[in-house]
Length: 131
Image (cartoon, rainbow, N blue to C red; front, side, top):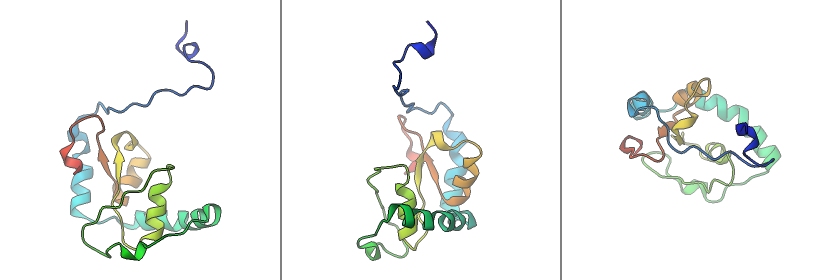
């Protein structure tokens, strides 16, 4: 039986948690995030997405002024959707460096992540570099 017939219609493929690429593959992303803040790419993405998020989702921020303007801070969105991190970037005036699963680091989005201050975490493996 062909593999596509193994799954019932409408079922989802299981998620892949382990990224088989070696840790060294991601070293440059960690180095860049530690050495430099997000560059112009961060502002471009924020500029494009802010009107969309505010008009179509009609969100609001509560106590976002309590997040320090600089220095270390951990912001942990609930992740109700794949857009949560964009909402954080819209409502916080500081530039946030985001952690993302390493599987997202493929071309062409890898360029956006690299320049936008996103760094990878290798899920399912010991990844001390991410922290």
